[in-house]
Length: 227
Image (cartoon, rainbow, N blue to C red; front, side, top):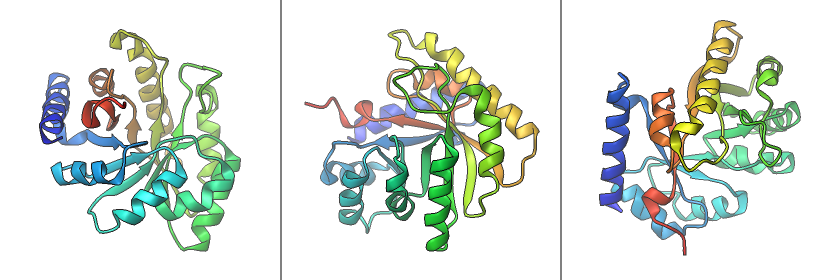
């Protein structure tokens, strides 16, 4: 685990330096869905500080077991509105908000417990029917709508691009997310900060870094291939 993490960190650093960015501007989200708490504990021991989970029930169990660990938990899977109350209690940052309905539920639940919930807006840059996310042309309106919710903080954008064998082919989708970020930032909407771009996974994170990623979501390159 430590060797894989060290290798990943070297690749992240090299990708950032190659495009004139500071390596510390890019953070690694360790995607631990389906991996047991023991493996997650090992990753934290190796130096991981952000864990990404995709399923509420699985995450609840791991977070309870690992409550003593110095780690930030991010939700990176599709989130149903009815599970908003659990997500607000468990996660520091939710990457996958794509509707006013979901935002309203998160606002309601965050208000109940006096929390300011960090969120990212998920954008379907590839316009794929199989993927969640708001259409690129609708992101600005969604940001304006959700900015009214005092217990939410919009901190950036997230995307899952179409799957290609050649990482360079996904670059336009990452670039589009960055350009959307720039347009929203230019509007200076109250309660909206465009600090984060969550994009890039094991097969394409170096390209994502070139296009401005601040959070890269990596599973198999860290934990290994699932059986």
